Image (cartoon, rainbow, N blue to C red; front, side, top):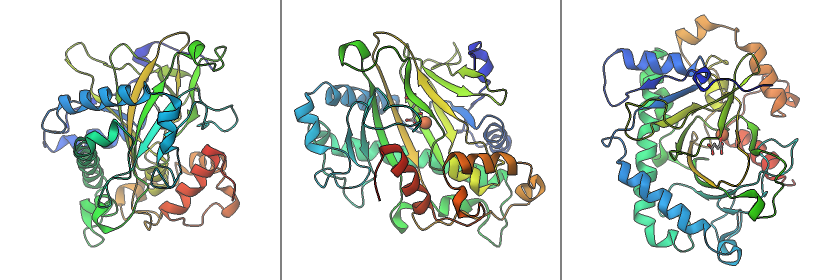
Length: 346
Ligand SMILES: O=C(O)CCC(=O)C(=O)O
Ligand SMILES: [Fe+2]
């Protein structure tokens, strides 16, 4: 696999704050081409100051000692349980066929109704974190509604809010998780400096992901259909004062749409001494949501064109053993993925 010119990622920038009728169609088109789109940053969606504040908070947290960070180790009771808390260097492998990723993370789930226990300095900013998560969810809901509109979801079955209804956090628990990510200087932290892979090749587990990155800290690449890795620029347009939010489709929306929406494989790669921060909001449906085909004429017309891709995706994710067609719930699906990522035993 080779790497090509940045333009090759071919990801459109869409202004979802404007509600002209063509916007849902643009979102669907991007979601079913590369599975990636840039959402133009707009303070009415999420003030830039809030994004900046979260990055500062993350930098402060990760700068602490291992002893300070490990009081809230991932999956521990102190951190609020499964998939919450601090992931140490190489503590997970997004591509399980490779060693652990040389990065750290801190996972925060949305308040139910209060936030999980947090260590300093995150604990001093609970209100800001909750506000940020709520804004992220509102952006995801807007995109999910647009997808419902463009897919012409059956009115009798719920219409354009079909997806949003299944992501209504007031109705129960979900796998939604916000991750602060830190990719330290590899040579300074004893990680393997020979590899430039900082987050192994993977597709995201949930419905949609919002990714926040910093100017001057590239590294994300997507795998194009011709098996070429294409870099995704942090800011794709000189006209934009701040980087847009990168949105990508996860496995669940791909399953849900018979493979019409693309859950594209991506990775983070960069070599050498630089450190890098990013933040990802992984939006998941309610745990109880069933991953069955959705009531959409558009998906029906798409038919089984995505079947091959979906089959290989199921195999890649180790889901083939259930006959390939058994309907999973969102929670069953997520539990399987987390087990593989963290190397958890039954
Ligand atoms: O750090 C990044 O830019 C992307 C990370 C990512 O793809 C993930 O954590 O799922
Ligand atoms: Fe990802």
